[in-house]
Amino acid sequence: MVVHAQPPLVEIPLFPLGSVLFPGGQLQLRIFEPRYLDLVRECTRHGTGFGVCLILEGRETGEPAVPAAIGTIARISDFHRDDDGLLGIVAEGGSRFQVVRSRVRSDGLLRGDVELWPGEPAQPVPVEFALLQTILERLIETMAPHWRDAPRSAYDDASWLGFRLAELLPLDTGEQQRMLELHDPAQRLAELRDILPRFQKP
Image 1: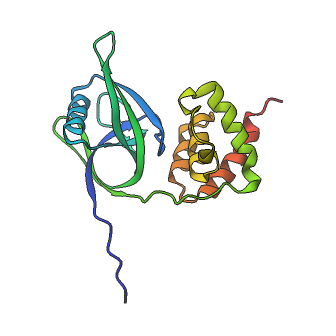
Image 2: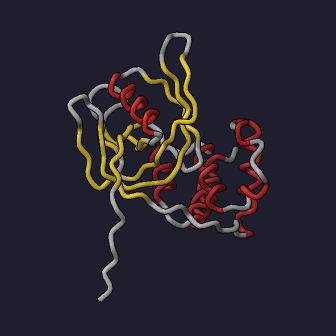
Image 3: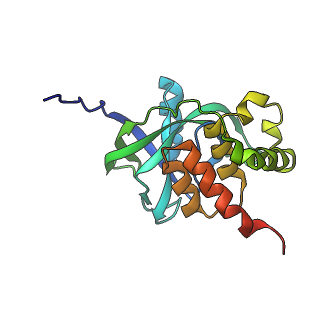
C-alpha cells in the first residue's frame, strides 16, 4: 500500500475581507486596526505573506469574522501613508490555500494552519472560449489599466484569463469564491461564459 504524505501545514495570519483576491491579482488596503498594523509589521519584517479569505459571517472591523476555508496568499509589494495618516498597502495575490484549523489571538488577529495549493499548470485557452479573451481586453482597457501591458501570452493562458475575468466581471462575492475554489481552468472559463448573458443589455 502506498501512503501519500500530507503536505506540511504553514502558519499564517489571516485577513478576512468582503472581497476575493485571486492569484496574480492586486489588493489595495487601508490599515488602521492595531491587529492589522501588527500583521503588516510582521509580514514586512519577515518577508512573509498573509492569507486573504472572503468573510462568510461578520464584518471587516470589530469582532473576528468567520472566513471562507479557501483563500489566497497576499504579499505586500508597496506601502505608503495616506493624507489622513492611515497606512495604505498594495499586495499581490499568490498561491491559494485551504485553512485546516484557525484560532484567534488575544489581540483579535486570526491565525490559521493552512495547506498551500500548487499553482495551476499552464493550459492554452480552448478555441471555444476565444470570445472571453476579447471581453477581457475590453474590460482591462476601461477598468484595469495596470493590466494593459500584460503580454499577449497571458491572454492565451486559461488560468490567467479566468482569474482576471472573475476579478473584473460584476460577479457577486459568492460567485467569485466559487471561481477561486475551482481546480480546472477550463471549467472556470465555461462557467464564466455561461454567466455572461446576465450582463448583456436587452
